[in-house]
Length: 576
Image 1: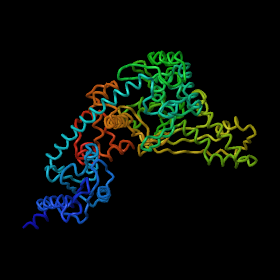
Image 2: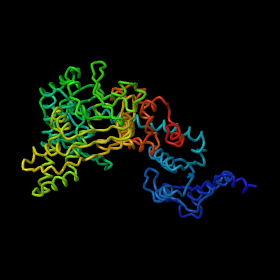
Image 3: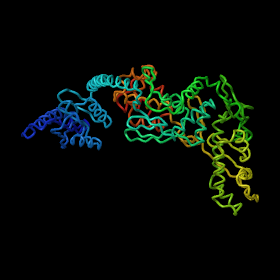
Image 4: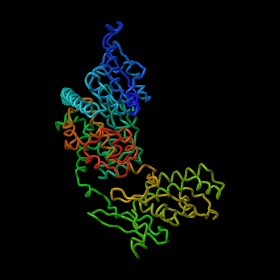
């Protein structure tokens, strides 16, 4: 009868882990480890009807403290779990697994990751049951309380150190290096910081400042985390620029954001307070008043070149909403008849122009075009041609929009825009005339008249009420990056893990403390930190832009508590 019942349940392979801190009594015929194992066997026997079976492997750590995770048998069991050999882990009491609450909860997360249940024989704790999970939640609450008490002492120490002007660690800012926990100026990087401040004050535009930094080849600071993860230097963005412009470290100050206090630092300043204050004055000015040029001043680069599949022209137009100009191209077919009869309707001018400008730049530097030039004038050497084209490539980004428009009109014969592709026909004679500016000796025998045609597969779609042009698989047509990357969602996940690390390392004592430091509502911080409970594969998919297009941060926030079961998460969030 019992055999029939067991066959109706899935087989569950059980491992018993035993531990004793001292070696006293281990030489006896029946010692403490044997007693623990015997209790585990009895528990497994009592659950035989549920399919529980004891595996032959023994995991016994004798004479090893529960305060360390470096235990041979424990590590062996962890490896076997990763290899998929174990379904349930049994211990005599919870402290046999670990005496550290943080280590214990870490092991529980590890078990959950590999779908392994945990059972404490004498404490009736089984994570397979709702009651077992409730007990774990209580334990987590006590662990949180323990962390908060300890973090108060650390915070007091940090506050005192900052009053003395000491840098208390974290991400090393651009312009400095940390030696013996003190900041020292790196002059090569300090030059970049001064350039950013001076350029921003001069242009009053973060966009222009970022572009100027890129033309100079300036990038953010490369760094490596304590875990060994490397973050390479990147081009500046407006966000990274603002972080530098607002950072009082650069005038030799140390901020204590929680108290709202600023102290004289022990490190050297990179810029003067006068320069810093000028930058703050510009930052605090309403952006619409420091915008130097309206988007309406930009020419329509593709005017007269665009046609739809039926041969109708796409004509430039714009709309205005709250002092903001939206430029786009509209089919004359849609204007003359109805929008319902036109598959393209309107196309965002900035999106389409960026795609075409990138294709113009690439076409003038591609291998096919280089070979055509040499076939026309064999006296030219390939290195000279490539050098001239490289000079053009470097100059392109520096051209004014009007000059870019002139070149586009010169080198492109026509552009056919289909719902699923864009076909660009280039004018060889116009391309040669552009190259003549860089190679005056280039001859034109007129035998390079065959047009060069480029076909780009695309799709037109909407996201967050905005029209986009992407490749069929959703990537950016210009740089082939993933357009499904949700910066807001990724930032929230990064925040959640950073806040959890602050709690774990006692840098912050509570969610309320973190919310206060970040200047955010406590309710919002409490919702965001729950993102650390996402299944690892869901987090990875979001970071890679592979999440469902309908999944947004607001949906995760409004969804309330996430299911503890990862399979339920996948179903609820559209990953199943």
